[in-house]
Image 1 (spheres, rainbow, N blue to C red):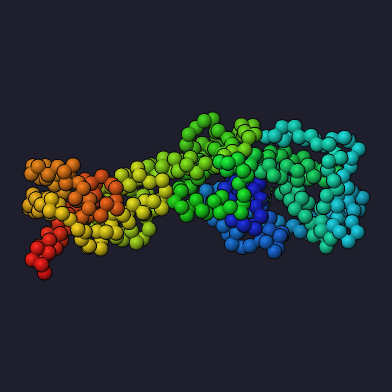
Image 2: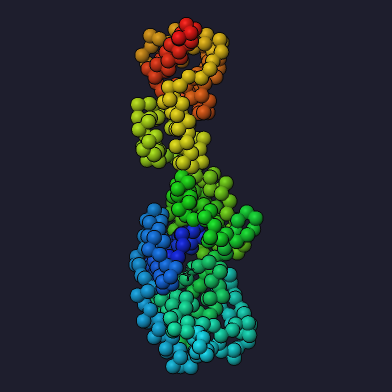
Length: 419
Ligand code: GLU
């Protein structure tokens, strides 16, 4: 049975490249009715932090990457040490004077080679591979050894990981062959580059999954964006997890580095945002804005808001533009033409109680939106919101509309009387 794993070290924020690797391992396992393991590689005691582990678990939950098992590398340290001892006993490794324990590379063959499921045939002259460390001078095992031993203890059949590990794979295969461990298939995913063709660095905040979630990218958008970096999924435009499982093929992963284009992510997010129902939309509004809009008709304008934004953070910005100025009950300077219009508008609608009749009443009095729009926008939102003016009016509703006009009329009156 196929078994894959994702093996993060909790030494930093969970980044987008890691998320892609995790998802690919998950998809491959599920596609083949296999199992998927999450292994927290927490042996670097100085750099491993509980907060980073919690972040990994949280992001797994958000993206519904349901693992069948979870393991902690630190639990296996004893086993790792036993393998170091076994290698030493069999004269396959040695200790350098006061230095680390090294694996003795057997250079009888001219080349080391293996078939990578993505990169194809990998062939390296044996003289290019130096003896390498399997344990530090205090005998604590290195990543190369612990990671390999764990993959065997966990009975992993397929390792899908970033291309930056391809040299480690050669070394791990040398150890595995020397002590006849079961064969593991390896697939190395090309790394993600920025638009300038440079490798995305883990240290760059811009690659943290958390950053995108906080910016207001929906999990569906991040999922689609990241899985499509380097794999076309039969050209399906938008996939849920099940579609992704059905259409995942390791052999379709492209060899050239994928380009990280945030505009593409925004485009995908717009697609998913526009699918939101009003109830779902409300889940993305912060409590302050939710409270501030509870007496207005947000349901009438939510689609207009969605068609203008790229993130949920921007939904909240749009709502602030709508209510900021209105709630301050401030007045802005207006000229005589505007004053005249406000008076006419109020006259035309003062007896109305229903916003449905509002536009008709205005038009009957020759007050078309084209003519009054600018003034209304000015006195309601001080031009902060760019939503269509009829939507702004409906958002506030007839009684707020009247109230606002009255606020101006009484202010103008006071001004005229020099009060
Ligand atoms: N802990 C390693 C890392 O985060 C695991 C690499 C692997 O997948 O084998 O890079």
